[in-house]
Length: 248
View 1 (tube, rainbow, N blue to C red):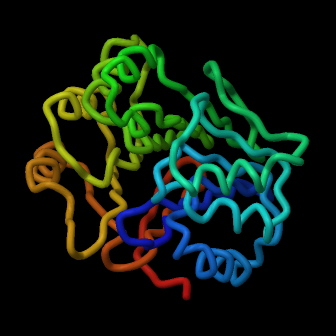
View 2 (tube, rainbow, N blue to C red; view 1 turned 180 degrees about the vertical axis):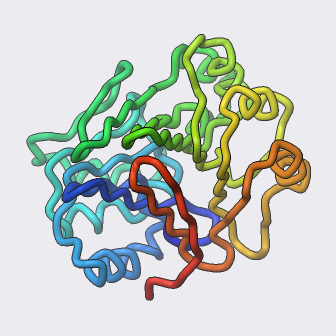
């Protein structure tokens, strides 16, 4: 999980396959491309944009133009910001780019990736307010015995849908939604997840809500965030280790 302030850019490597989830803001693009190349990554099997806020799709156009990518996936709605239109322009000739309209399972090496779009977008769109966060694609990754859950920026109404979905959200590791913001629905969701590890994408200036970190502590979950550097999670399918470093 790259440290890019209050934004997401998450690299997943399973065996010899590579996936990038979100691309930070446009100002992060050059540094993100540099970090990927430093890690020896010149090809992506999958690029996923969880939703079209500028802190998730902002660097995507430049990533597409600089890193060869097999498959590009994104949520099924139209964005309104300049970064969205730049991204769509960059992928318009791509032969394997498309919106995720239903629960979809993909392979990444020997990892199983399941993508969950919003169950009922009408809950959000009918409000006539910004609804990008609620449209986030949620990603479940199973590698060996370990389950990782990445929640984009889902907020109260979407989390409420997820709580009622009947889906088994249990996981060992969770990327907390919406940069560590707390609400009661999220508390119920974490009781379904029971994670051992939780990570948030936050800058120094805007730490995760104390109600959330206190809750995680009471649950016995170890908390990490990107305020101090890139958060690196390693797993062999049975055990998980986490460290904070700076891939500059």
